[in-house]
Image (cartoon, rainbow, N blue to C red):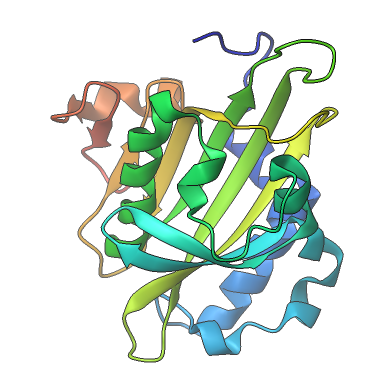
Length: 213
């Protein structure tokens, strides 16, 4: 697998993207001092300028979620209506398991996730792309974390759909009361700064941070 070349974004750069920042700020405002807001509290008018990038997922099984609400970006990337489709259909097979682990950590942590992805060039009709994805947990009607409010931003011309993305790196933050502390891939944002305080996990591409600092 070939990754896009160039300067890799830092965690601060990921969070500072206008779309991701808007969605994150709205989600944080819904928390009202609790760890995870309810899906019923989400009002599309609260993220009006980010709607085409936004989506809502529903947990189906461990590491699996289907798209309940899909913004225009997901439709453009896949060239079809994505409602009801598994979220993993956007991910290239060689990193799909890595994506499923990150997805499950968002549900079970609960945690928030910032993902960095790329799509390889396969000719003039499919140029190279870079993308960022944000995953924020939500509670369902029963109070369990079973939904995700997400957003995806794509840099570059999408070209001929469908386009599928390789997961280059992920950075997850545990919310208060969860079992997950911090988990990151070696190429993830902040990895260089905190790698010294990590230990290996059973998965070669993941490490767990030993401090909550």
